[in-house]
Length: 568
Image 1 (tube, one colour):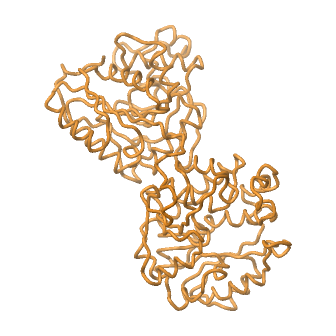
Image 2: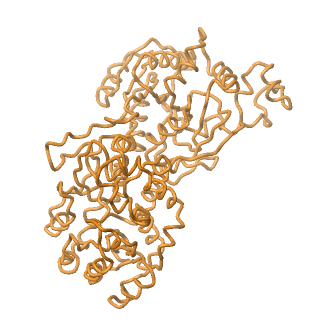
Image 3: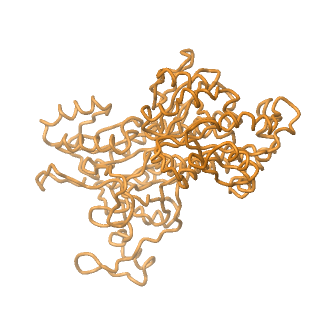
């Protein structure tokens, strides 16, 4: 296995035809590329037949893999037409003075090319004949600003593996109140969940081969989503979003305000580099920059996490531990409230200690019951400034084992579930989004509302199967009717007649009001809510969704006497 392979590509896209400071001839690119080809490291190179001849006259086949691709490949990609539409739109190119005459606006192939670098890196990973451990994209014209001696003499690339675990960018401070490379700054902040003050460079990026596929998938989803909303910068705009939004997947090296990548390679040569992860926890190069705070400019800032606990601090601690292992954002990002329903008051100081450690608000009540507690949470949520809330009972833990599936064949774990589930709820305007397909007693293929609605409702919606079994469950109970199967990034979900139950969920402020407050019961039960909400759903008053995942599982390991169990 080869440790490090460089991936690059070069095409003539007519930049020499520009009549201003943006102009650059293909000969000048080839001159700089010639110096890069002198490196001894393995290289995977994309280009047309003319470039292939140029490359193979200068390199040997044992350390070179040339993948033939002409400019038609860019034209056949599904984002090509979206880019063309945006680049000729006055609202886009007039947002800042330099943009109208830039390569982004003037050249048909410029943005399709630079925005394809991530895809080319991933394709190189798939086609790699060297069985490389690490792959990095390096711009063909990099020696315009970086002396090739770093690669040929100092062999700095050999030093990279000892610093890297994640996919890695080089990032530099960037301060703008309007746009970042043509991407509106307020929109990039929204997508990032933060105030973007660092931009990921496009001249050099990559990492271990096992990290590339995940980041490539995220990048593609971001590219198509943003272009579909007429938002466009360059690949660096999207790298910046990924840098902020996925600290568990990506790391970065920070360089100076001038953005010169040569500084990074000089520091790498001298073993004077520091790998960083979460942007909000870093000291930026220029201390005059305000350190971004978590979600400071995001619509996700007002999210709550409500947990019902009962007589077992160990259950709460286990839930917290599972969240930290699965996706630490569930603990680090929302406002956290524990509704302590315990009857065993010796647990109170232990609950208080846990809440203090992890930043929960500890609210002690006299055993309101499971549904009584859920009702109290709806009332508390309604009076708060929160926009969305997650609800968990203390025995419904995350299952942080990547690659495993539930009994119905759905993934147990995906990355960044906290952010993605909120984005799905917002995007679809769901009142209620259930996180689990498989549950303890059943799953979301069976329509459990059928058991709980009044007979007249069964007659209306299930005339072919209107009668309940005399006892137990019916093996031929109606199935849930789903309308659409969709996905957000790598998270599939469905819309339709999703039934309500007290399993982990995310609820909007308006949805919670319609579900729990506009109609109330003195002693609510889960079956009552299930019946009521199904009928409201069929009237079009509610919109529910369900993730096609099973990220949590039920495990009450601290048991209590049955006579202590209370619904409301």
